[in-house]
Length: 301
Image (tube, rainbow, N blue to C red; front, side, top):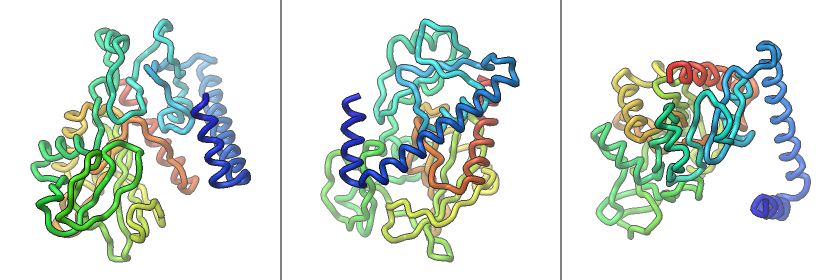
């Protein structure tokens, strides 16, 4: 509670009361909308939740994608091990996770999603990526010549920067190749890929301004089927990457290098937020496709 109050005070000081109340309004509307969707689904099911989902040791907030999906398809969210539940998800919004002993016991009885996904650091993503794809994203800044990307190793701990190499190697950072993703219009293109085990419901093609490179200046977004973006071989390797990482559910950020046509997985997130900042029609399409994939994943789990 104290941390939440501290963040609120910092936000008001930085952006002012008007910005704060706009955010408050947005979060309130989000909660009301998805809770209404949940009630609609309950009404169809005679006020009985189709599934009860245990999130443990933490649970998602209304900002997380999976919270929205659960409400859309009538899944009840709980965080209490003593109650009955249909399935479970190891939920920790951290880069390095240590599975709770209690959730390990649950996993002996029913499969717990993401139970084996304990390291989503940039460095580990680079290691796993090379094992699966056979080529490297990571570089040694001391030996590399030219420009590279320096990123914090931890998730959600700051943006990356383009630096010149050779350069010293600092602790707490990952060093990656600078991938050329610029299209013919001069925009940078990346792919956001939701993962539901062996299902990719859609791929978001995100077009951004190149200046500055790591600020999320979204100019355009398109929704495509995975087979329109990736080859069969690439899709097979993407799923193998997720399996090796231990990620049953989450999102990947993938880049395709214009110079060699290879894809690079640059980020993985097991507790994704959003979708936010997108046109309403596209947001609804992403969530609809994702909710179907989520229900299918649970059915097959």
